[in-house]
Image (tube, rainbow, N blue to C red; front, side, top):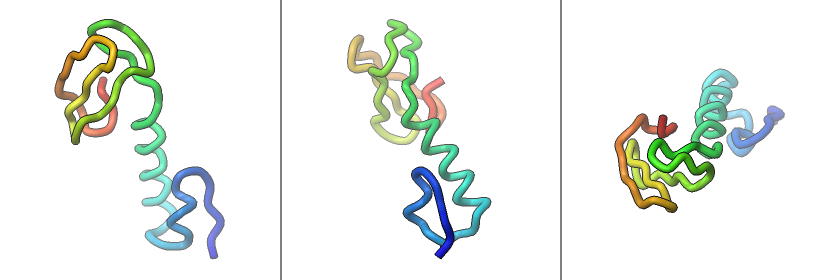
Length: 70
């Protein structure tokens, strides 16, 4: 079985190294602490659905890219 690291380790030897590496990069960026464009608080941003983001602190909702709110 192939060795892996981080969040892509669960896939094992499946799907190829390049795709696992790209997927891991996207998932790490998605769950980083992001800054709200309205109130500038960090760590309060959650993704409602693909491209829809909200801030828990100021309750603003906005559209953005699918995996990162900025």
